[in-house]
Amino acid sequence: MNQKEFISKEDITQNYDLDGRQTDYYSNAGKYLGLIDTGRDPLTGQTGCFLTTKGKQVFNLNLIDRQKEFVRLIISHKVFKKTLKLYLDNGEMPNKETIVEIMKHSKLYNVGSDTTYFRRASTIIGWTNWIINQTEE
Image (cartoon, rainbow, N blue to C red; front, side):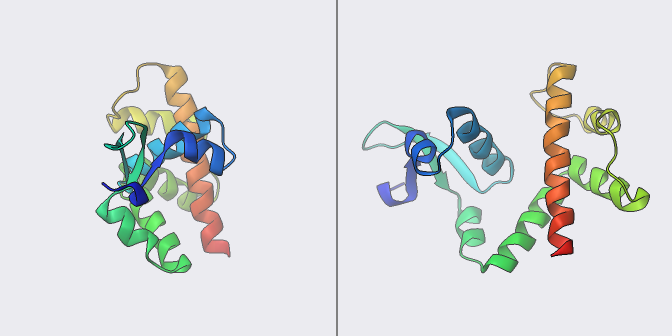
């Protein structure tokens, strides 16, 4: 990893006008989709992010193809695919309780409480709405 490919968490927070929690959210989302990884810069010792090989491929695409690839990556995960299917079948977003049940049946990792399930259900709703909005543009 060289310095040009690496961006520290501090730089992400400052350059993109995020707070630390938002930086963590977006870096975790990128990791979940296989687009970024986190680590320490060997030169500075700072913690930060760098694009994976897949991430470099995706970010070299034109905007339309990149958006399509984001959709493909998101719905490659069972929870998002099932939520989107329910949305399309019923013409409306499933409620959080239904999404939590989908998550519980999908054996998600690092979810220890119902509070976490419901917080993640909000993310699933947000990402699913983003996918739907892409089809409407």
